[in-house]
Length: 97
Image 1: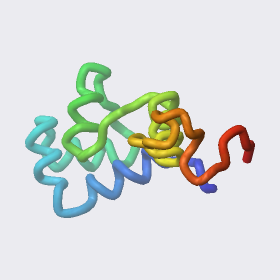
Image 2: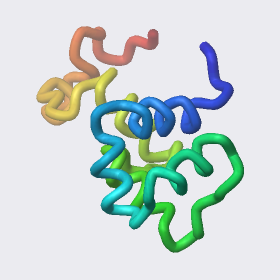
Image 3: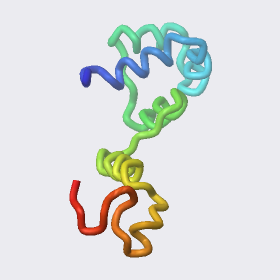
Image 4: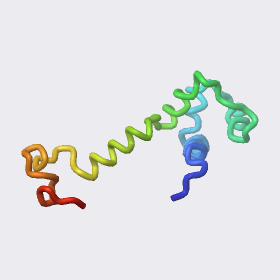
C-alpha cells in the first residue's frame, strides 16, 4: 500500500481541479495565494485547517474510528446471529477463524 503523501495528493487534486475556485473563495485566497500554497511557499494557519479540509470534501477521523468501521464491515453491524447468542454469522458457534 502506498502511504506517502496521501493528504498532499488529495489536496492537490482538489485544489487543481474544477473545485479550486470554491476553495479560493472559502479560504479567502486569491490566485497568487493558491499558487504559493501549492508551491510550498505559503502555509495554512492552524485555525483554517478544518476549513481547508472541509471545503475539499474531507473530514478528519481517528485511526481508532476507522478500525471500528472496518470491524463492523467485517462482522456486520446488524448481526442477528450474535445478538441471538448463535455466534458470528457464517461461523459455527464456538468456532474460531
